[in-house]
Image (cartoon, rainbow, N blue to C red; front, top):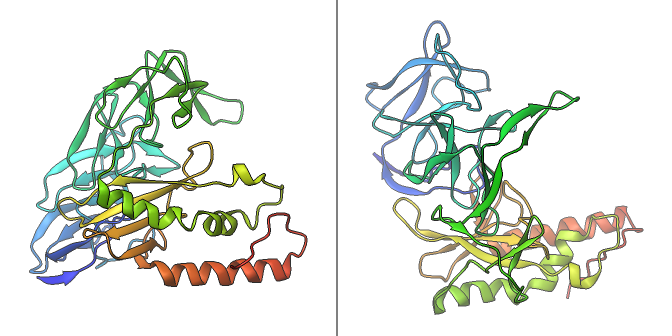
Length: 323
């Protein structure tokens, strides 16, 4: 056992644990993939056909074991990709197929499929929302759209889209939320209807968000510096919300950034932050698999890149001025 920082692969939300046993992927003679512990004991037998660049001996990253591929000789389940196990080798779920791979974690939750229905699991593999709907979108600003009675249809470009059914909106508890009759000004617009502002904060959490709000102008100018259509100042305002709180295996707050329409700036890691449990140390999520960096270091690099971009593109309409 050794202290390690473990990062969930292919996701914007990073899991950090202490004193966790290192598990490693291994490949059999016929190139099937499984997982062993440090003693060489098999946790999950080699039975998965992985087509990524996974190498023999690569560590398992995250609080669960993800096999990004098919199980040999097993019929593929529609709308799924990969398999997730706990670190003891117990099967947990099959992720929803998204972007030619297993679904990403969005606002701390990943979609999975069971008996043709879609639910959500957290970073520890725990089912948070039971699978009971035909389709559910990723969470954004505390809400996800879902439909019942809908189905998949191929387009002329051989892509797929959801058609038909009855659409509604759920919160992070899986509860159906009704639209508002009147917009209060702080609510979120989804498919032409307004829904209540979904977040509540204590004083410590308000102070965390104030740290980002005080730098709203600078951060928004950095984000839009390379956008080639002129953005009105009122539309450059960013919104910062805490979408995950400290929990087992994750002693951090995660802060996401949204544009003026309350839409996440980036599904993976763009302008996403973490804050220590005591609310005093701030980090930026550097990439989906490279961990976190101190906020000030991240900000310094963002400023440097923005200034370099403006030197090379003097006609950019959304200027960044370092004040």
